[in-house]
Amino acid sequence: MMLYTRFLMLCLCVCTFAPPVARACIDSIKTSITPVQCHGLRNGNIRIDSVFGGEGPFYFSIDGIVWSTRPEFERLWAGTYLISVRNPQGCVLSEMVEVTEPEQLSVYLEADDYSVPKGGQVHIQAIVTPANTMLSTISWRPPDMPGVGNNLDITTYLSENTTVALTIETPEGCTARDQIYIEVEVPQLYIPNVIQPGSEQNTYFTIYGDWSVNKIQQLQVFDRNGALVFERADFWPNDPIQGWNGRRDGKFAAPGVYTWLAQIRFLDGRLEQQQGTVTVVR
Image (tube, rainbow, N blue to C red; front, side, top):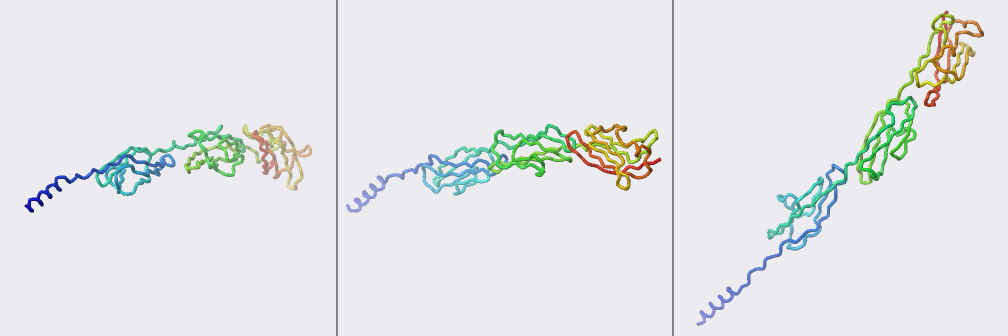
């Protein structure tokens, strides 16, 4: 009788044991996304800040293959990623997450003229895309160009062939650069070094120049002792009669080497001084 009672109690205990309660699966996640800093870089970031529902420890994956307990994914390109969270019971929650990037920063330089006379003025404008981008740095090169400031629209003067470059930078550290080549036209001057007074050719000494020469501000001729032999001011180039005819005090100058000094005014307003020698032959 006692054996039967024990068997009945054991059977009752087994038959009335409650089944285990299934653990809840993951309900949702909260993520923080850091966009790519500059277009084309690989520095985006996704971090899973919170997991709601289910019991840990949790495992995280960005490709569904490799899992880790670290809830952060770094050095990401811009794009869409499938983020997954799994718990030990095998519950998996996946969510599409997008890492964005800013529009590509670019700058384009445009000049009103790509060929200017020596010392001539050139206007250069920088066109930035996207428009109205906030810039922290505007750096022109060469840095010693006149008229260059911290702006995107400059007027400068060039005396030699120059590659003008501009680098811009945003507060986020994104940069863009462009450059243009400005050719400077060197004035073409012809100044005789030999004259033969009284001959049919090479009778006069004067200054010849191309279109960039405006006027001869002053022309002086000196003998070997430094005495002034000829002087004329404010006359047109390319006119032999306006120059020195090889005479001194109404008579043909003595053969020899004479020194000349000229001030030449160009169309751009620049005044240039030149000097040399001319030989008088008979």
